[in-house]
Image 1 (tube, rainbow, N blue to C red):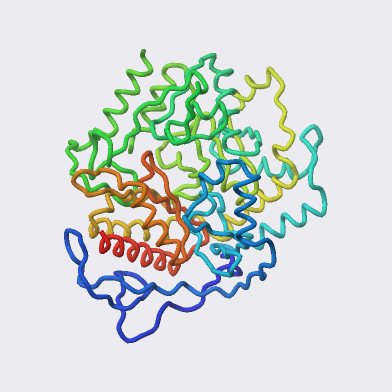
Image 2: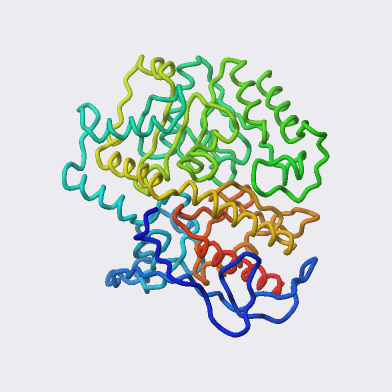
Length: 493
């Protein structure tokens, strides 16, 4: 395990009267008052828990003022940047180290969103940074019309992490670009045109991948890429079928399950819809692959966020479902934040694609390959997949306790350090918690020193996807902060 960047020393608050969640090491003062929920706990959080200590000292910020940055952001940056800016009082990020970020005022944050699940092994991880600097001094850029060591060393290393016959690597610059390329390769290889994705999905914002994306928030009122169809996602919390035995996750949904033993409705009914669509979760993906392949199609696994050990149980998300796709797309965690993506496929599909000429100026340049190669080494040497499994499962089980305790926490789901917490008005209706109400909790969590994300079809889900270097102390701090934010919201409501 790489210890340099852990930034952790000791425990949290001291004092005479403290409350401790079950299994928690983070402590905070006893509160008074009552919760507006189904069952009032004996003790309720009120004081802000103390953030785990960190020995790393960031550089003092001496740059542009916050006011000037916002002026430029409004005037010279594209208008969309203001639309996606998080928080009423934005976070002005200055420096990062492992699981930590500092703003320009020197305030420290525990990063539990990792730049949208992108910082896989930690901000400015010393080993990855050293590899980048070494390559930077040797060769910034050349293209793959030449033969250079970093490209071939990385392609071989990446291919070794995938099962046969997935051994041919195409390097790109982003996940959207990787999915674009995979769409084209699939169409060329099969001679088919239609592509099926799941409702509520996101696969990129390029002109082609926006057709794959089935979420209205990312859509524009213009015609998107043709040939893309969306089928039902087996959502056992909000969907019409499934219940408390149907999910591939450490935490099951609160819905009662009416499935007979060995017959999961959340699997069978969406599979039937997919079969009808082709004609005109536990085993769902396996059956979906069978249906697609019976009709001459190929299966693409988008591992942009779930890959590189983030789900904990496996290095790739698809491995948890006993399937082998025909293509795997990846990005984000592949380079720990360095812009990079990839498509890995079979020799047969690669041969079909070789009928034309495909060239990418920056895909697989020396810098990207050196960084990505170091990331793979670091994942192994730091045991980040094992951290994802241990710490992520612990967080999910503790979040499930909060779900049972608070009326507005409707669902907890995920695997490893890929966690969603779905907020509702109440459990009976399962109506999404409105955006303004979500933002109150979102802002409170940030003000107490933790950065998380939001997502979902209705923006009703908190996304918890920290760098895979976090500790149990970090997890306890997050759980305490999140519970306090929910509790305070309920008191105000």
